[in-house]
Length: 70
Image 1: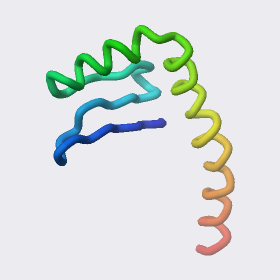
Image 2: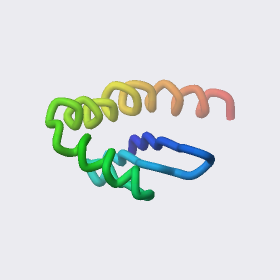
Image 3: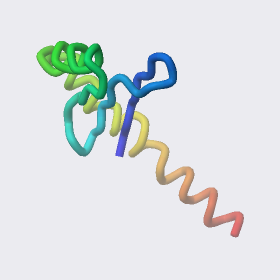
Image 4: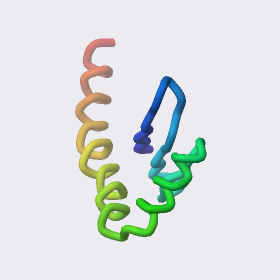
């Protein structure tokens, strides 16, 4: 799962979760940001692609490294 959170003044403002597939706002301002980002299809699809770019490409390498060291 890929999660990207934004914080302001040590409070979580927004979060994108690949399992949900959209942004969620936790503050008044964060709800506005999330609504804006969810209405932008190109930005939303770019965030969804981050799961493959970041997580799926690296998980096998990390998993193999852990197994060889145990």
